[in-house]
Length: 100
Image (cartoon, rainbow, N blue to C red; front, side, top):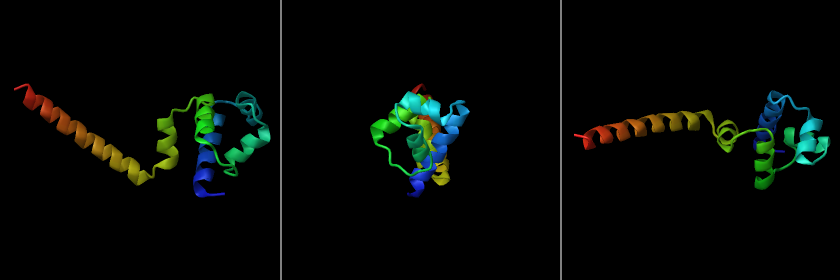
């Protein structure tokens, strides 16, 4: 078990609950056992990229949301927000200057 699997599993469990699905219902959608869903949610099993995308689709989760909540630290998110804001300000300034 590692931290990223645990964090990913917790996120997916919370999303499953928000979607009002039981582990058994999600297992049926994914065509796996309820025990396997439980292993994923406890971080005891690694995802393949292909299966993770399928899992996210079943829960109506965008990959952007998954990456933001699981793989980025708070400092990464803050940096991205600051960078995006500054980038948009520069774009706006350039647009204004080009229209003169």
